[in-house]
Image 1 (cartoon, rainbow, N blue to C red):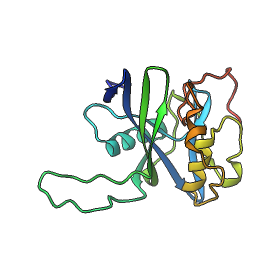
Image 2 (cartoon, rainbow, N blue to C red):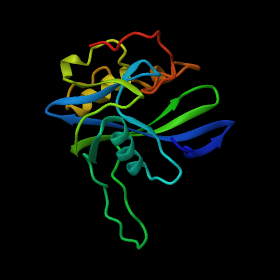
Image 3 (cartoon, rainbow, N blue to C red):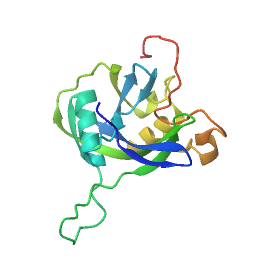
Image 4 (cartoon, rainbow, N blue to C red):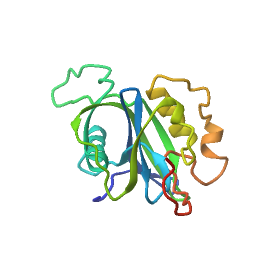
Length: 188
């Protein structure tokens, strides 16, 4: 990864743009077991300085899974101004407290597959298609579980409230939390 785009520095905290994508195929959602973070996550990563968010997500998906994806939703409006290109709308945007000095501004997309052959890269120990019933495995955070179910069109009754998402003071509860876990093989 090259230099990641810094959105801003506000109140001494750096804010980086990142993207995340939930890909559903045959009623299953694709997650990877992240080698460093020791948890199941959807593919994604930092937006590089020369990229827009959608281009970054396509790149991250190809690097992390071997697949090329398309947005499940299109831009909500048509551009009418010369030199303006509208991007696909993210499903939502969340701000993740990574540590005491920086946050991630995460544009979260729901995706559909276009082409490619599934393969993992060195950042992940495993790639797995999860059914709705399998989204109860350990090392799957509540945000990931909620939005994976939503991508599958399922129940989101365990949705995260803002106070639970921030944990009240330090330490991330995001889908890409920097919490380290003991090294164990990924749960099956």
